[in-house]
Length: 390
Image 1: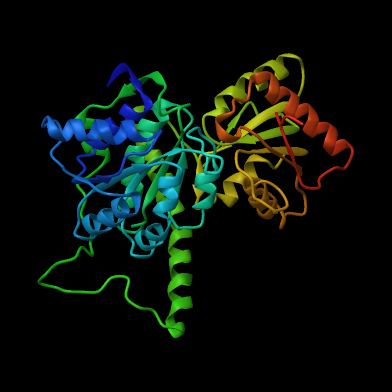
Image 2: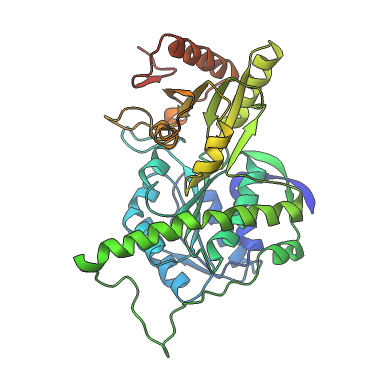
């Protein structure tokens, strides 16, 4: 295991290389392009023995991934923003066909107005497509989680596709130090892929066939049951990765939250900025802590409820809007997850960081103070936008 400085996009490409992917089908889109450019270079110069399929669109990229995965190939792609939305139709086919494609998503704000910068509007638009979804906070995590995603997705009892989310530009183009694994270490963690139901000309079968009304609901119910059950293997993969590397991941991760009465919830790279705010506030004697959702789908209900059990107030930062909805999309799910509990924290919703706008540690401090003030006033209606010019 060696320590090296590397751009986030290149770290993801390196993880795909170490995983010995068989097929890469991709279309370039900012800010994801460096990932697939680097993979194309690795294939072209012989460092990676894989088939690289340049296609005419993201829809075609995911369609090609379906075919490659269906015949038993370890398959990888990457996209961002509008590219993810152009894939949207095919995302559902991948999951319902139980094809363990792994995809890195450099999260990008959706148009309009046109923006190449990052927020979470793209992932929230794709949250219900039955893909395992993981969030990275830094370059090391982006590298690690891609390897973990292959292990999770390809587990024979799982066989669901997986997305690894990195914030566009904040991680995709950021150079940070990370520890690379040796090929031997990766091989111990990630066994050779074997799809138990791969297409075979000698044993023909149909995948994704027409489903009339008398079976469609039953198929979707069974898919949901299987998808929820795969959390066990997701957690197991992280346990095994921790044994190998000493880097441990959880579905919900806390930061200085043990004695905190007020918790801030974040996802993605802004979490590390929020930690700076928590450090300062705790130094000043304020009981504020941070929790982060590492696993977005399947949603970790049990782990989340345990993480917030002692808190009196939970302040949720969304980086996407739910137009016409009651709160930000993450906050809506948080409220739903807490609703069955007799004792639960109050929840305040904020939306910020849209279109790549930064949130400083000082703004996170202010957000926590404003959220606390809103709770004291009993103001839990709707959400509040931060850093909006009136």
